[in-house]
Length: 220
Length: 220
Image (cartoon, rainbow over all chains, first blue to last red; front, side, top):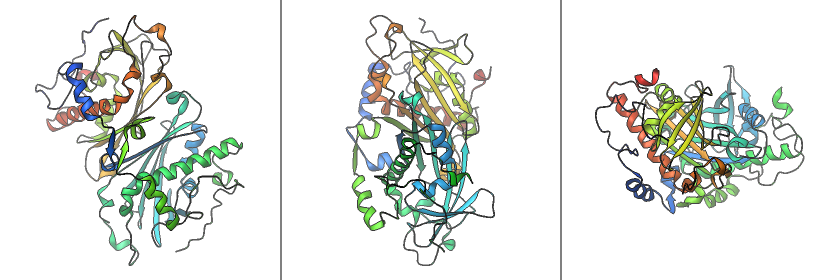
């Protein structure tokens, strides 16, 4: 074993960068109390779900099929709580639905999926389809690789775009609508968990009953 | 506006699936208290970081360049706390380094990156390079899209593979090594945050000083 370091790490940087902790400048004895001080028995909601809203879960259904299901925008009609009535618009790939959380609220969705990385991103917005700033970042992982069992792991993160705090296109909102999508940000952690639980229950039911994860009607 | 639902959602499923909450079977009045009951002012460490360990952060540096940097296995020599001495093995794409957290501990890494989805997965293992079960799932997102400002968002999740609790290949471990990588699982949340902070500081220093995010020596 050699601890020599043949790679010129950080050799382009003449300064010491404040806050960079590497074993060379902060050994285990120095770093352990720093780590311990970052750990908590409990974490405030704002720290866990303030700027980002990550939820994850295991689904006992094949990852490739779960990805194919999610990659079809119409799957949202099934596993979301309130997105309903998806119809294709005249713009290729752009779907229109209603978010029944809002009164008379239209939601536009464009799904960007990558088969190799098994990512599925839903680019959405309430009221208008020109600027899809609500982005649901999802990814399906083969649970065999990461949990040593068959099935899928689904990762899902939203980032707190400033438009959640402030509707940038109020002129596109229906008159007198009492709510804005961002009013629900603090509930996203639970709401998304609820929807991930829906996704899990639907996929696992289909897998257990020999049904296609992506149903036939979605293949038409 | 129409609330009619032209799509035959869940039409292949004759049963009511337990635990599926949709606005049709659980309206807002019924669901709000369920959501509120899932929310907490604080969450236990085990709930947030028990089975999955998600960390996220914003980096003021261009996403494509941050992705290219991360996609080179040798970047780990710079921004990780303790992985050092990366050398290519005879197996294409498989790198050998030392994890200086363990005494005399070899770590093997194969990086799987997707340029389009900007994912970077480090498939690693202590001691042996045949079964790379420690998988660091990372993804770079354009912050302009999700936070309305230039820069990158980095998502990073590890899943608690059962081998963290039990070394499956003890015969490959150095004699009398006092630690196993899984001993550190409960510290991953803080340790990964520390390393994400390193990554942020290094990338932001380079971006602010007009240096390439991926340094020249890594291009050779």
